[in-house]
Image (cartoon, rainbow, N blue to C red; front, side, top):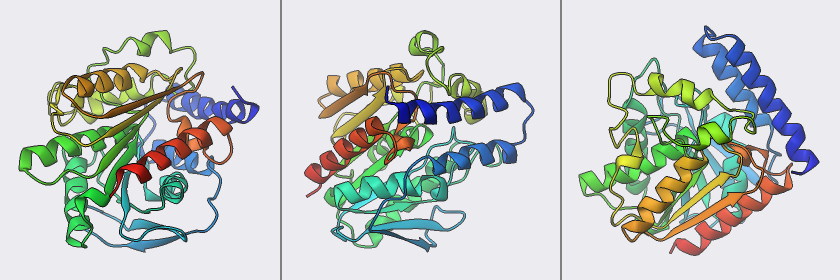
Length: 299
């Protein structure tokens, strides 16, 4: 692990310790910690940002516009945050780096969060935003959907929802440190617990995210979904991620039904290490690889 990664992992660890020490922390306090993670990435150069109102966004969504982008290619980026936090603002730099490498514009919607708006409110919002993107004239083959952690859950669930409704799939989808297993059965939750600075937070959030629905509902737990016919997937996780099993299981299930899957596991990296893009070499290398992959898949 590079010194840059270790320094930023320490920031994650401090936030986790504070949240675990205060189980009665308010949703607002927890969101402030998640929002602070947005400072970990460097500011991408030659990328501008613009707020926009669009369906499926309770507050302003954010456009990321790299100067080199092909304006007909777009990444719909769904932010992470355990379903309880995160925002377009907290993830704009990560999305900006990804969009710049992929030569796309990117759109980050401000979907609804639990506990105020229980599942499937956030997924419904993401579907509304995807339909809006289509209405703006973007061809499905030139759309990529991407997300990290809970946003990767929404990315996978959105593909299942598009299939259910008979809507066009995007040209590609990228799942970064996906949080999928709402039953907490994955073995990496145990064998990586001592390595991951964010260990335990996703496990603690599953009951809150699934309130009122079964943890086997495929739109909440995409590991129970049928991805037959899905577009190419890039699945990325850290070797020390407590949710590594989620990524491995999804990749295996999708490959088994004929999906074109690229799996990337970064040694010694923790959950959501992609946040460190532009500062830690491991994160920068992975985000660059994902961006180039997206560029090669969109037509």
